[in-house]
Amino acid sequence: MVVEERIARKPRRSLAWLQSIGIMLKVAETQLRLISRYPGSLAIDVIMPIVTTAIPILLGRSLTGSFDAQAFAANTGTTDYVPYMLIGSSMLTVVTTALWNVGFWVRREQQTGTLEAIYLAPASRFWVLAGVALYGMVRSLVSLLLSFILGCLIFGINPLQGHIGLAFSFLLLGLVPVYGLSLIYGAVVLRLKEAGALIQIAQWLTSLLMGIYFPITVFPPLLRWIALVFPPTWMNNGIRAALLGVGWFFDSWYADLGVLAVFAVIMPVLGYNLFAVVERKMQRNEGVGTF
Amino acid sequence: MIQVRQLTKTYQVRERHGLFATSKRAVHALNGIDLDIERGALFGLLGPNGAGKTTLIKCLTTLLLPTSGTATIAGHDVVQAPAQVRNAIGCMLMGERGLYWKLTGRENLAYFAALYFVPRHERNQRIARLIDRLRMQDFIDRPVESYSSGQKMKLAFAKALVHDAPILVLDEPTNTLDVPSARELRAIVAELHAEGRTIVYTTHVMTEAEQLCQRLAIVDRGTVIAQGTPDELRRQVVATEVIQVRGQIPPRATLSVQSLPSVREVAIATLDDGHELLVRTSEPRQVLPKLIETLYAYGASIEDVVPSRTTLEDVFMALTGRTLAEDTRTR
Image (cartoon, rainbow over all chains, first blue to last red; front, top):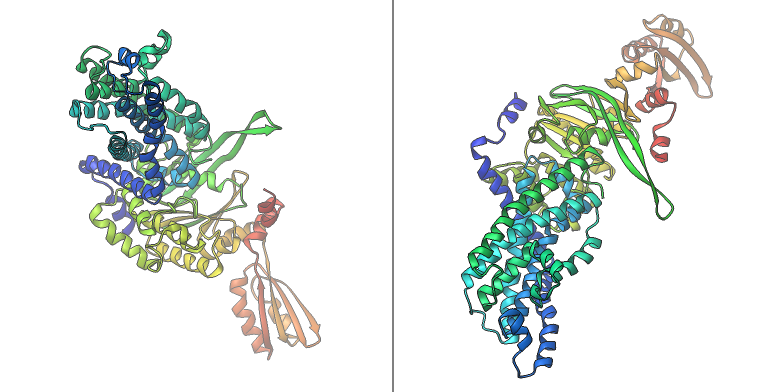
């Protein structure tokens, strides 16, 4: 009798959505709790964009002195290369944090044995991954905000210039396809059980394709086309265009935002399905928990 | 409650030969397992390390997809309805692993309670009850990394109970525990069983299986080589057992002992300080009280009675030709 009552008490279907959202929030909250036990890594998130952007900014200042950067202005539409580079560098941190988010999560949980513990639970994998993505998004947006403000203070930039709301729209919409790419990377890590080696190449490639210190118009045509099928390039340019007035890729903000919206639909679907395929393949073989 | 039919599991492992050369090899981890575990049973899966117990458990808990065959848990197929199966099972599979060491025990339990759909308003009460039951008050709010091995195992056990599932799957739960902690955990398992839960308990410790489980399956090289109650398993391999009695035993008592039902053979030896009577019987439990009664009736003074019981270790050895300890070491 006791046993039958227990089985009958399982989740009510009418509350499934609410429960699923609750799971997503709990996963995100737990990941935030975990990272809060490593305060040094949060500090690095804030400081890194400033450190990486200081080198090209100081180089630029030493080359141009008190003159405007004419060649830079001809290529980008703005002479103000300092905020241009600070935005690029900050966006690189946001994008790479997001890109490696799912892969690092998979790898860490594989190594600690908690991935199998999660797979033993009835919670849908979709909502667990959504929780991981939500955590990554909160973490990267907070560190972006802090590093951008700190960078503006250090380099003497007005942080309230341009269309902030539009820039924020590009940022939020642009992060969606990045998490789709993150799922693809997560699937690769799940399969290969290796997170580090791939990042060495991909980190460099990401910074190149996004054009963090220069516009992609200086690329040779083939590389420019490759950069244009990489969603973060559109996000980065959209934010710069909204804040600094550099040109849109399609001459209007809504066309560029539309392209990001298409990426935002395609990439997560592609990423989640690939992750599910790899997960199934792993379950057919030795399981997801082997490391 | 749990039904397994012709379950097989084969997977590929990559073997390395030197620096770069690799080859793939198929491992047949399960070879046609059949099991029936009734509701409310405490069922033991017994076998050496590498026998296939954990692979079987992983198939039953939906972590692995079987290659062929079927398994149903509480009426749900493990392949077709994995979410319902996971709902019905509380698992302790990886011992100390499977916990977030940077979180406190309470934070771990709250997290997994959420993943098992325990409603938010019930979560704290449920966790408080578990903390009381498993006596974890002293350490539950410390980070797990500061726990002793026994405390981590207790927390892992609490995690398996957090959603109050009707079926518990415990994979070698006493593996890293010291003797008192293992005894405490076994007592709690017995309590949970008494409450009506179905429990699947895997172990390679024969005495533990013998002490806890009503029914057992002995798994070896991916196959169930025997199953039944501990007594049934013993009877499968040994028809008779010997009861050894020491003391002052009048030799004439042996004739009466010989005539007791199911006694096959009686021998008496004279020692420096008395006698040793050896009684071979097919029903030691039934014979023992009558034997003692008969000996007293002849004026014997008994110092010691040792029924030489066939252990499950003996059963394993008789069925496989290997000892369990030797098998566990060499795998």
